[in-house]
Image 1 (tube, rainbow, N blue to C red):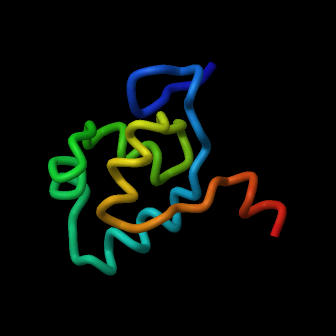
Image 2 (image 1 turned 90 degrees about the horizontal axis):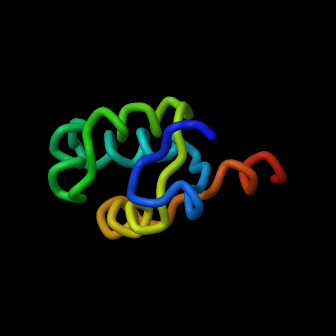
Amino acid sequence: MGAHLGDMATDALAIDGAELRRRRNALRMNQSTLAAKAGVDQGQLSRAERGLCRVSMTSLRKLEKIVGTLPLRDEVAAS
């Protein structure tokens, strides 16, 4: 299984990284700021934005408190 952002690989979700980046930029935050505010690792956040890793449900909830609800990659592909 690939890398994931968070605590458990079993609850890792593939998010729409481009949408996460778009929202972070709209909030005028750099990755370090968003990572610090959400309590996640900046390197993992970078990989999630590029679609190189999944995020745990815990990390997803933390990010969504700041940037809003994020679509999952499967949901984006199904649209």
